[in-house]
Length: 353
Ligand SMILES: [Zn+2]
View 1: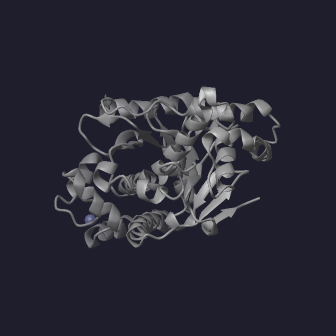
View 2: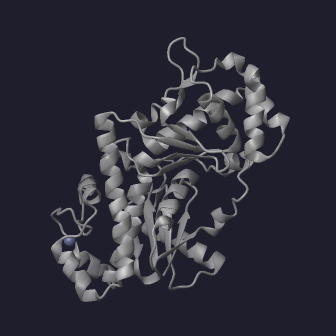
View 3: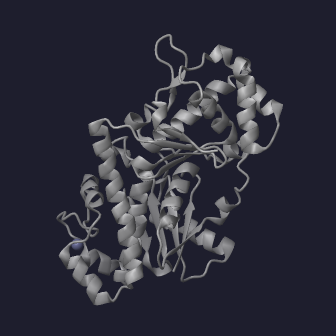
């Protein structure tokens, strides 16, 4: 069963990548396929990173269901996708009906809205988990019900903490995702439909990951626990195993810059960045194999403000992935007259070679 995951111009690349990574980690009959548009981004140089980050989402951007499905259809045509394959659009647009997600039964097309979740889960939620929940739910619904009217007939108008809860009030969706489960009635439908076991296993595996993550994050915040961070310069990732395997991807410049601040627990004064030029260049060279003096010189060239832009981009990625509270230890920040620094106790940091 092939499932293509694509995005529109309003869905940020980072959200897309996080969703795809999580989905493709699951093992089973469902084969998740990356958008061929995004597969073109192979060489992640700094230039590419900036260029490929698409326009920010616009809260006034509205589309109809059929316009959303048309994006899936156009993708099918463009790449000659088999009609039995499923195409999932991660969309940054709002829809007139104000739904989070829906499916076009006839053509195996689906959309999931990537915006507005923080209104219901707070800014602390990592949206990709919720989006994965939605993807798996729709695939399961597609297996269970042969038409839209059959889905409608089976929804629960009163919330039970089940996938089939209707959630007229969008707020009810929090219950559904926190339980990530099915009620006994729905389990009976599954039994009667002869759904393959390896398909169900894959759905339940991902749901379990989502539930664990949501609950773990809430507890970690509540207990004020620090999670480990694993820095992988060759892969240009920051990995947070204690927060449900969250991965933050950086560009080569961002990675070198972040590493520099990790290597200086007491912080760095931004106007003396030039004193660290050699270290910065070494890090950059190790990551890219490119002894490009220009790429690092322009970081500490104060006049064009590259350093502060890098800093805010890194911080935005961390906050976007971890939420404001959890990210506070890992961002590069400045308090009072202190130099810029990353607060995390270095005991919790592993730097891979
Ligand atoms: Zn149910």
